[in-house]
Length: 130
Image 1 (cartoon, rainbow, N blue to C red):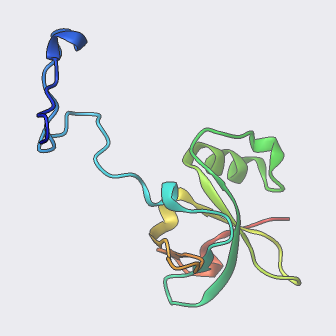
Image 2: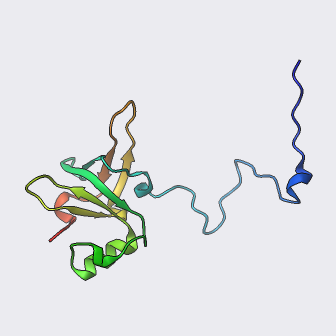
């Protein structure tokens, strides 16, 4: 015989009940930005479908210092403010930086597969390290 479980709302004070269909309030994020789903090791493809490389680092907005990047100060500050993904372009290529707004989507993969980051721009529009 099962005993019904009852929630004692008096234990949490006078808070209104949460409901899954509660409408979003101004300033409340409703969906995470695609960059929040990016992880190191993911493959990166550009808007044309060309393979760009693999993600080596992800920085969310305002979580780094511009002087840590091997870039012009203006580019570095823009990326730090917006958030960015560092892409290893391969042995003969310098790192590439995709601004958070250039991440169009993320397929997280599954079954042990690395995910794929799709950009909204082509590789030649990314910021290159010096």
